[in-house]
Image (cartoon, rainbow, N blue to C red; front, side, top):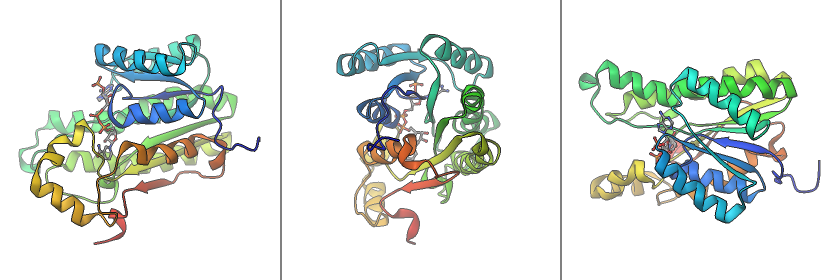
Length: 257
Ligand code: NDP
């Protein structure tokens, strides 16, 4: 191992849901550390816009993009195989794509429950399983599952999301139990409240905004930049003996009542 534990030069990373928001900044952080990055999303126009910006910044030989739905098992298998054939062996996977749906539990219908579970939890199983095939064969790989403070804490109206993110933390442990011995590390990052498109409505709601500021020991919303260092660390040789952990990056929210 060289003296720079955090150097990702030559490593290929897929970040799901990196056309915008947290995923986009995590992809930029990995690229800043030297990785070759595969950007991903569903909306092809948005993805192309992000890919053009990344290509201008990092060069076309280090930036690729691919659109597929992370809840579609066949599309996931086809596209992970395509990445490995056309870009090269995946070394890093960040399972970041996710959605929220706010509605009281009694009004939550089965289709919406299923959509939230599929996008936030089943997706990590599907993409993780396909990416792990090659990683296990090669005996090296890093998977980072993007959880949430809702992995540990519940709030009204987001029960499906809370169930999914709690499940994702345990999936992180289950993947570790099966794959760690073959050199594949799986860890989680659980962000607190981060200002992105997903949370814009909450930022704009004065009551919610002041609740967050009071509830967070650090006294502010998180930014996507706050997640970059931990993600690079978990993707790098600096974390080679870290297995199955979920790291809360939440300004202290989950350690106080
Ligand atoms: P955004 O809504 O800003 O971005 C979501 C990304 O996921 C987009 O790129 C979107 O692409 C993609 N995506 C959603 N559904 C699918 C799908 N079925 N198939 C493929 N891609 C999909 O979200 P954030 O950046 O805020 O959140 C990213 C992750 O971080 C999520 O897992 C979220 O739960 C988690 N998180 C966010 C927090 C926050 O405060 N923002 C706090 C804690 C966790 P497209 O538009 O093309 O569908």
